[in-house]
Amino acid sequence: MDDGPRKNENAGRSGGKRGRGGSSETRTSSRKGGKSAPQSSEHRSKGMIPGASKDTPKKSYGGRSHGATSTPRQPSRDSKYAKYKGSNRTGGNSAPPNPWIWGWHAVQAVIDNPRRTIHQIMVTEQAAERLGLSEGRADLKIVAMAYIDKALPRGAAHQGVAVKAAPLQWPHLSQLADDADDDAIILVLDQITDPHNVGAMMRLCSAFGVTALVMQSRKAPPLAGATAKVAVGCLESVPVCLETNIAQTLKSLQTFGYQVVGLAGETETTVSEALAGEGRYAIVMGAEGSGLRELVAKNCDVLARIPMRSNPIAGEAESLNVATAAGIALYEIRR
Image 1 (cartoon, one colour):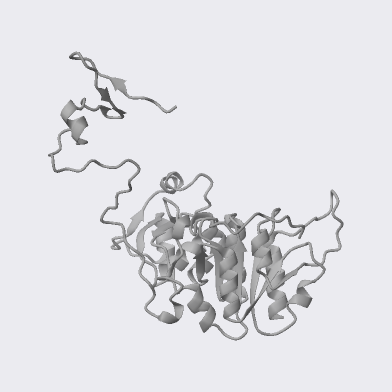
Image 2 (tube, one colour):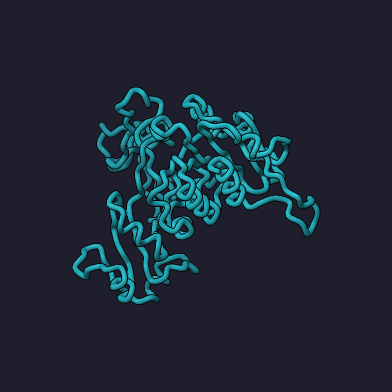
């Protein structure tokens, strides 16, 4: 479900082919593997699949088949958090098809994290010695630098180390928010997809003791690759919660005693004024350029801006980088 429209911020169908033979023509369907055999009049009249027994029902078009890997989501055991099902898997819908994590600090943090399930470690011989990895490890693959270059996306600054691991799992946001301290902070990102900005904000979350980083599940960068590289290991320690609907998430945080403050340029209230009191805060950051979406902004308790001395003209800063703005807001709460 979409949270609403955005709000600007300043801070032939192809028919089957007909077969030949006999006085009547029968229609066949074209596939990659060749043409299927013509159906007999008996098959057509009974709605049967060619080659199937008479008891085989005809497959309905548009139907969805479920294999053995389809697993229904189980409700939480604790009825206190019944509206949030299961746990947060930080791969979510944003998990990349090739979930490599690279870069020295990021890889070392993954290897040292006992909560990680590691599938493969790909390193050069020198890097393996530096990391103290034994050649007897089943998940270790010692390769040349060029091999890693080829396995990872072009331009990846891997420093001779890369690891493939299963996504982390964290408690659901409701549990994290409820169990947090009275001065807890939760950072909410409204459709921020740049991996460098998200990685930088993971570092901010670690530095300022943020309880959780919240992102929309279908508008979040992969929690691997460049995001993990920029986060320099903080991906292992900062709980990441992927939520479907940010506006509804803000309403839920308010029930746990969080004052929701959205950063926006179109307001007179400054961040120092909005964050002056004590208590729990949820800071909401919008995407650069478009800012907070309208429905998300409406569900904030207050909108606040960062005062700037520059003028909104060419040659002067019109707004701040979103990670920089988040750092200012987090500092205002903690100072």
